[in-house]
Length: 293
Image 1: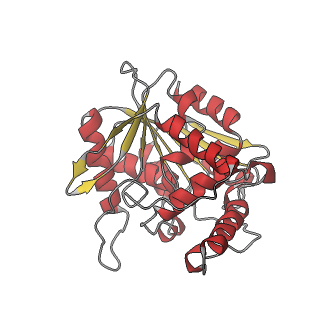
Image 2: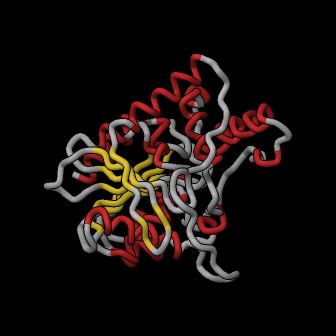
């Protein structure tokens, strides 16, 4: 398990940690191992009459990318949230030789451990955020038995980003205070649009998750492959972006992706940035519950 970064002893930071612990306590933890790679899965809900929902987090992320969604999505379904291999509470996947597909070992460990929990060939509904969107699409192609696919601010789309602020390399910060300042800057520059949502809970999730990241996801996301994967799948697909997502130009991208195949629904949520399911949780939850059915 990665080291947890020190947090300031303030009421706001303490409340944020308590919120994370409260949601985590609603889940059961499972640690199946595939080819020597242990993956931590959190299971919310107990309904086994419908296919489980599996949601994959983004790069420099963890299961906590879905913290504001777990309650709503597990109300009538079983919800499975992994820390993907190389992130937070899970083992790192094996490294690959230069030029090989670095995502493949992650996909293999993810698929093997999921099948250990639900059974190989068991239908699932699948979703992914950011790097997790591209991962979900490729995972669906590899595993099969995916009923519906939801992509939120997905990476791998191959179109231009529209970043307006430079990211800061927090790993090179000289001390914890400078590191926290860099992480806070990056949270506003990349993840969230409304400054009011850059709150202590968002920061704690971002801080903990970044410190637990050992997989280089940026190169995977920028290499593309999303459109090929969803074309191959041909399952009902929700394409959801926040209006101000800086990793894409959402309205034309959503229109393009939705037009390229049947059974695709494109949605742009007003007022939201990249981390749409956190910034506009209620609207995102309603969209996902309706889509998964």
